[in-house]
Length: 119
Image 1 (cartoon, rainbow, N blue to C red):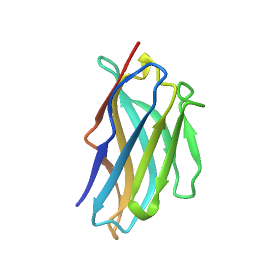
Image 2 (cartoon, rainbow, N blue to C red):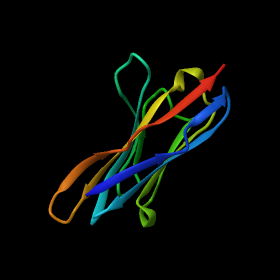
Image 3 (cartoon, rainbow, N blue to C red):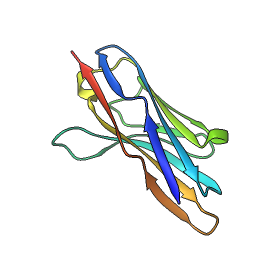
């Protein structure tokens, strides 16, 4: 079984920074794409950023130039560095990793971490 554990959320003032982490553990033979999503209260979950196993990245337009997704393959961890935070970035942030258990690739989600940006 594979587990994703997130950390790094919290309360920050507008213009501040936070760094989220998502570490995978368990029976892992490889990790393909790593992604971050977020869900604000009363809204549907939305894509934030993705990084492939070759290091290619893609971002939602709303976070381009402010957020950076980074992966550490040795630690099975993906990070989301968030700078110049805005109140509209307030949401629960979820990580997603596509992980191989040696037999097939499966989709896993973290438990979510709350990010609150005050104005």
